[in-house]
Length: 348
Image 1 (cartoon, rainbow, N blue to C red):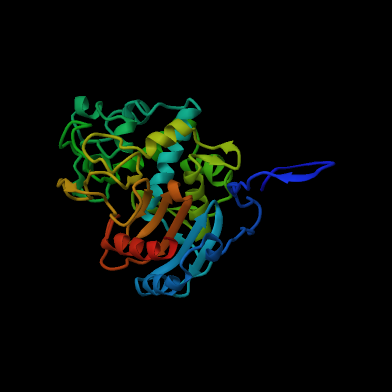
Image 2 (image 1 turned 90 degrees about the vertical axis):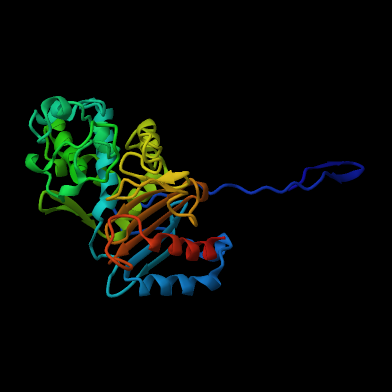
């Protein structure tokens, strides 16, 4: 645009000034299947590299792949008989749902993450000596630093939750986090699923359900419901003007939560850190989790390559559901970095 002035002598024009207006964040309506889309071309993405990305996803046992930009769907593909209405398990990507509900319960004054777990569940919820059990807070469960033995399998009965180190002194990927669901249920006086539905699922228009799996409860939904949660995360807990989970908690959840594993927040994985730990090992690895990913990316990663990637700097949410790309894995796999190499070839 440029300014101008007109008088009896004529019209004079100023210098041209160019600007762009920023697109506002889009949220799909909660009561409809409508979801506004945009094209890769509108973002100047390299469309010629999309077939290679999709071929890789399909050959690596994917069932769905969704890319949101500013909340709008840019890419949405289904493979191997999966459809937009098919349900699939989140596996440990659903840990981030538990983190979020814990934060909601805290903001409602039902608990504090600094509470001892035994304040809500009573003593004897582990086999640890009482003095050691009483060291374990809700924050230790959120940050995977309970000090309980992670080598004993998925069973979270008291007999299988055994002391190995003081809480806060050891990071280990452990299903004991699921006890937070019992804490939230006890603190709210509701079942875990009822509280989840009323405080998170329904407010952002998700579908799905928690399905019992032994001592655990695993969330199943369609892929768009996973994308809805990713969009909530991209907006720091805000859904179309409503703050579902307070920004302070969510910022802490996506920031390093303890001084052992830099790449772990409150049940969220974090990229761009100088070192990281992986499940089932006490080794500290140098470098970032996904070198081809952006430094500010935080992630919900589940068994057999269930993925939510949130990239604030690019306003992206990326969803992948499916079977294991290669061998069975607990969270991170080599698939992540190769997938991001192919994503980068499209978006950069």
